Image (cartoon, rainbow over the protein chains, first blue to last red):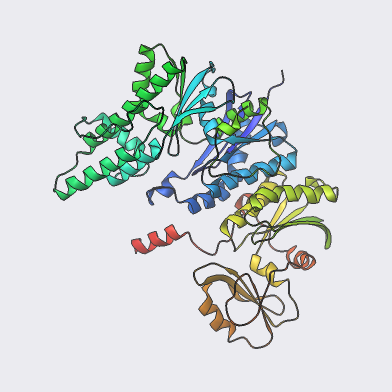
Amino acid sequence: MKDVYILGIESSCDETSASIIKNGIEEISTVVATQMDIHKVYGGVVPEIASRNHVENITLVIEEALSKANLKIDDIDAIGVTYGPGLIGSLLIGLQAAKTISFLYDKPLIPVHHIAGHIYANRLVSEFEFPLIALVVSGGHTDLIYMDRDYSFKKIGGTLDDAVGEAYDKVAKIMGLDYPGGPIIDDLSLKGEDTYDLPIPLDDDSNNFSFSGLKSAVVNLVHNEKQRGNIINEANLSKSFQERVIHILTKKTMRVLKKYNVSTLLLAGGVSANSGLRDKFIKLCSDNNINLVIPPLKYCTDNAAMIGAAAYYAYQSGLQSDLLLNASATSSLEKEGA
Amino acid sequence: MKSLFIDTSNKILTIAVFDNDELLGVETSDIMNEHSKYAVDKMKKVFDKIKLKPNDINRILVVNGPGSFTGVRIGVTIAKTYAWSLNKEVIPISSLYVNALGYSAHDYYVSFLDARRGFVYASIYDKEYKPFLKEQYISIDELNSVINTLDGSVVQIGDVSINDNETKPIVLDLEKIIKYCKNKELVFSHALKPNYLKRVEAEEKLMVENK
């Protein structure tokens, strides 16, 4: 069979990225222009600044991905682009570039949901054994997704308020840590003890999560301690917070695997880089005979390799868009269903 | 010499193709906040109508601001992707300038676009469309004090009311635009970027704090 090359483009938040993926499983080249240092001084991503940087980077990033792969646009079979969810002004840049190339070179345009991308990042390192459950944990998502075949997504649980990564960032902010706070809390927790009395969030029979109560508990605790003139032990607070998060994520995920009689678990999204979360899942999955797939760290943050991989399977399942494709800040993964 | 003109900087999206100074085809869309959806599709429609291929174009003229930040980025991203991927020439042109070209037979053309909170992006051109007041982010009060010093016939073109004088709507004169803009300075495709005339608010705040 002829090889299929996909040009993936991603610009949903603060990384401008392009990638060439062969047959949905092989990463030929990936370029990521990150703006992390630009946004650090603001304590979070400033959407307008992100959009301005995307415009300046977009063609350079695509050109470099092609030249690293030693390919021309003519050699590409289709273009996959993140159309949502994400920051609308940021999404528009990758989208316009993708639509323009699709028109100029008459190549199929494949719309990719950002979370489908995070899930399919795992396809670059492992086969998928269906049915499977994917736990998507990021700054914008905390979702349990059931898949019984390629590019079919059924949401079986998710956060009712804050996403887990959002809670990490907010907790880091109140503790006065740098942005992005997730990795810092993860590092600190390795040196700390679980000494602070924090609630376990939404510890019920549902498949859903809630992190805003836990976040508020940390905020109140920090305020109260400050008022009393007590110094916060950052490592211990990080450990205590992270333990609650990991406890509830692993508990509900393992229960869902059992309930749906599924023996493959995928982790996906930025928070799947969290070492505490990885270690706990590795142990639990090994104890329970679950086949665990974890993305390599380079695929945890936003990148176009995962978009190119997802686009291949979307394309195989007949998903394609015309030039009227628009960006969508909030779009449902389930509607992607093949 | 075939030229493609792209303007996504204001409420009406315009895509036009010229052969030298002759207009071959044009597509517009006035659906608010939907330029992202329609721009590339309209471009395809123009090409299909006049039976031209993307590679037949020699030069792209794109309005790169000032104006709606998001709107301007749409046109600029399309233009730079086009210019880069098919190795075409690209010329950025000012929205205020093309809007001024829509009117004639005056001594001064006051061209401005709403920048909100009592400010506009504005420029004043003389009767030969040479800049008299260079384009800038300026308070409406300050702009009015400049307008009051103008001697001769003055026309105001914009998308917001700034004083008691009549403000004419933005109407593009495509033939005039190509005549006046086709030989403006080219830029390298990767270096093409919007001309915002204004920093991001978060940047401004940070600069004030750091002072």
